[in-house]
Image (cartoon, rainbow, N blue to C red):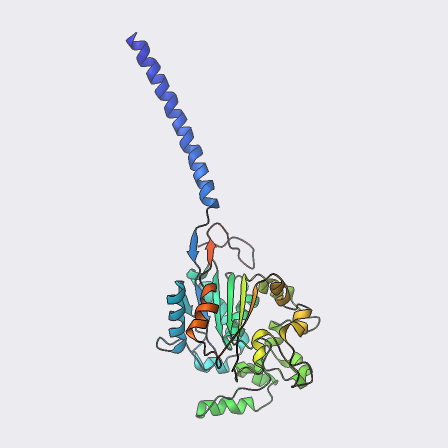
Length: 333
């Protein structure tokens, strides 16, 4: 009858509706699972850390270089200023500079899911302070070092002319390993005199700690953090007269007690005994030793495009959850 047919249709429609409801629920679950697996590509931001006698002023070289890298890579970049720029780059000890940089990156919401670093000259030691010392900071993926004095410098840089530089030069000529100079002159934290290694290890307040050089005081956390890098690009400038020896940009340096023979990075104890994880990173194919023509941090655009830009264009997955480096808990946007 007509009533029986209507009843059957209503029953079928009800069953269909229930099936569709179940399908939607299961389909939603499948979609959620699928999206969790899909790698959604996003640009990873980067920061630039300038060298000595420099700043991040809007019309300055470092601001312009940051803008150039952003334009070439398509990734957002920030020139990170520590203190007041030029003055503090000379007179603020590197330990303090690294602490300030750490607090700044932790406050930048753009960096919470991780970031890349480009360091220039002395700024590389602040960069490594961020990587190794910064508790609770966002993870660093790629680190590009331009003329970094990673193994130290054996000769003291002179500032130049003028009253400001006279003060600097007078400090440089004093006892470089005294507490006063270590606390008031940034370069003193990475000056390494090969004939005064005992004094360096005892009194230098920054680089020995950064490089895990002090026997019986090597920190495995610093090594773990350094080896967490995805890529480490070490750029040496062939005509560099500021970083002495220039191979310090690759972690090479003089052996203890002499200035003539130069050890390559892979001949140093820092590498062979793997104090900071450089050897482990290299074995994993994550270290790029790059040599370019030019004077100190004077890099030709084609070299920037070839050796820097690709490591600022890396893609990260939204499904790869970053962890707080101190608590190991997931980072929240």
